[in-house]
Image (cartoon, rainbow, N blue to C red; front, top):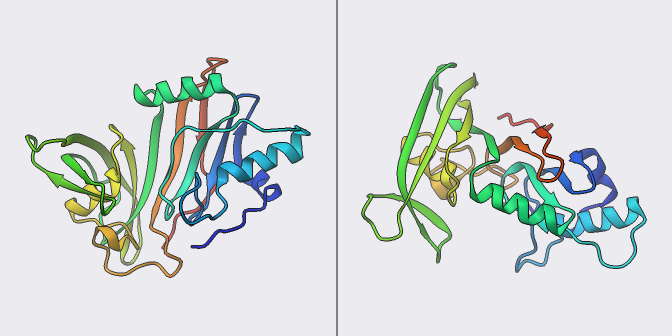
Length: 228
């Protein structure tokens, strides 16, 4: 999953929404949202170059990262083009005012139409960057909730649509694994085998929120396809 170079011009087809304040982009598996120790080109830097090239901006370009997706996953990410929109989006995220819908391709067959809600207390191990289910009175444990519905069956996998009710580190990956439905390719959380490209079957599929400046309702849906 080495995405050391991201062509800024090619990002155009993956921009789901853009105005003077925000960019909502479809992230591909393997891409970094923000720079890390690998030194690989990240989407934040590529989008700054895109803004320079397409908007004729000179000098430094402001672009704020409001949230991140794990490198092996794909789907929608919100970037802020102004400091005002960055602070407002961050506050909306803290208050849970941005509705996030995910899709997960999980091992095993679940009948279409099956629904459920998962509720666990989670604890993050910083050293190994992994989250575990624990008991409610464990120091630092945080309650995590999500709702799911199976929307499609395949031979050996099922496609779940997931509504996050909380936002915890690796929440979906950890909770589905504990439930017995490991995400395809997610060997870190118990999947039988990795995907050849190192990706996992998890997608940030839809975002619904009120625009932080115009106050208009915004609904963005990923154009990427999650299949076995």
